[in-house]
Amino acid sequence: MVEEEVSSTQFDRRLLVRLLSLALPYWRTVLVALACLLANSVLQVLTPLLAKIAVDRYLAPSTEHNLPWLEQWLSAAPREGLIQISLIYLTAILVGLMADFGQQLLMQWTGQRAMFDLRSRLLAHTQRLDIRFFDKSPVGRLVTRLTTDVDALNELFASGIVTLLGDVLVLLFILAAMFRLSPPLTLISMGILPLVFAVTIVFRRSVASSNRKIRVAVARINSFLQEHVNGMAVLQLFNREQRATGDFDKVNHQHVVAYRGAIRAYGWFYPVVELLSMLVMCGLLSYGGIQVRGGGLTLGVLVAFFQYGMRVFRPIQDLSEKYNILQSALAAAERVFALLDQRVDVQAPAHPAHPPLNGSEIEFDGVWFAYNDEDWVLRDVSFRIAPGEVIAVVGHTGAGKTTLSNLLLRFYDVQKGAIRIGGVDIRDFDPRDLRRHFGVVLQDPHLFTGTIGGNIRLGSTKLDDGALELAAEQVNLIDFVRELPQGFDHPVLERGTGLSTGQKQLIGFARALAHNPSCLILDEATSSVDTETEIKVREALERMVEGRTSIIIAHRLSTIQRADRILVLHKGKLRETGTHQELLAARGIYWKLYQLQYKDQETRRK
Image (cartoon, rainbow, N blue to C red; front, side):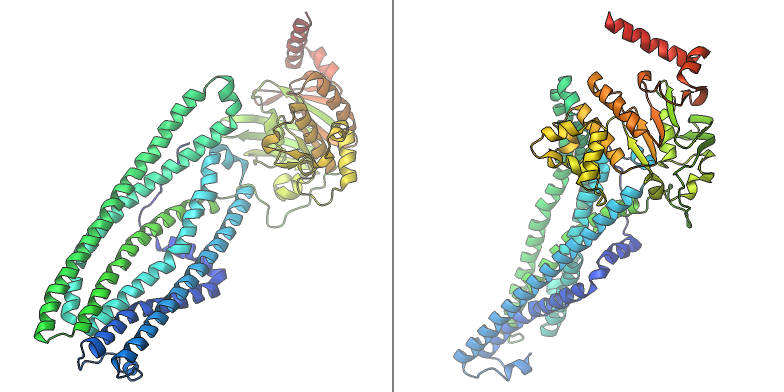
């Protein structure tokens, strides 16, 4: 549940370059947005100059001329001239509005497209990662990567980086225009800037700290909700709703506390900057008024400075906010790119071999495997499976039964020894090509939101309705499907809600069989079904394993008695092997397991 902290809070230029490269495919759109931004920045400087001309030429005439190229087109008559300037002023405002709208629209669209690409890359890469990665990574954290963190990056593209450049341009253009009009008034306006920057630095640090705490709090909320919503049945079964609510209140309160610092910082920052801007206005009014009365300054210049003075602080405020957006985006980018850079250990070799599964022998040769360091789950396991042979694997919980199938499917790679198919090490195969030849039925089959037919097909376009019906008929699912009004188009809710455990299990069998695998793996596939369903599954098994190499992992020994050979694992080692009768005659571990289940069945009958 605990979200890791950002590894670095320093500005990382390489990270920013990598982040901006996401918009590289849309560079033409970005260039148009920059053109709109430049036009809007120029117009921000032009409108106060128009006000200056209106005052100095018509309202309080003077001999000073700052824009002769424009004044030569203006009428000498005050009435007509003021109308002309008003129309130019209105045109500048409208053009600036359109340029601002165009820039915002283009960057929002660019941000959305870049984030669409990024989410697709994240999901595609996540699907290639090893199962070992998911063993150690909370689901809530991964969801945060694809949602909250990507949204933070989108905010940077939509209203951050280009607008940040626009604020810088506006500030530079305004300062240049102010120096051109009156250096003394410019110095008065800029005299307060060191204090503004100091206030901004304090604000930035305060908000950056709060933003880090907010991101951690959001990740904890996501993890908590994901875990408790998935386990809702357990919560209600043990009447833990009130306790869960109390625990969530604590996690939720951390989010409130994290936001408190940001709210406080924003609460004092803008009023302080506004106060400083008013002090600048007072200085301009005092010094400028004296200069106007003494003839050292025109009234139009003072009017223009008042407009510039009100505008010069807006980019400074925006720069502070955009800097926080940049910092937040860089922190999110660090986590997102850390996920994208997560190394895939189980991957295809440069020149993969093609798995010759049909009619090929499967061999485990001295296999050692540990999920953590040298805490070995399998210890020097060796056996062979002949083509078409039905093998059963039994043993106590934790003996390593499921690990065998995980290694065979290359969800993990062995640390010692080798697994071969047709004499070829499976590490020489592309994992996707290898898994295409296997059909797997798990103890708790996962159903996706959609339809029954969609859950059997799993996106395959090769399976037509006839193949679905044949698979459903072979696993005794067809009667249930025909009773549904929509048949295979019957909707399936998240995690198969509304379907019984047996029905979900039969759908899992149909899914495995419909794709016509060369090798079948059944991992505790009947351990959670009722007796009636188990009878159906047994009948289906006889048809499913026919002509296929099959590995049946089971606790219920009644389902494996007809296996060609039974492997008995104990504490990670292969301790016994043989048929059902041979193992009973040996009176070893298998015989003890059988006696325990037989006595348990006898007790239930009494």
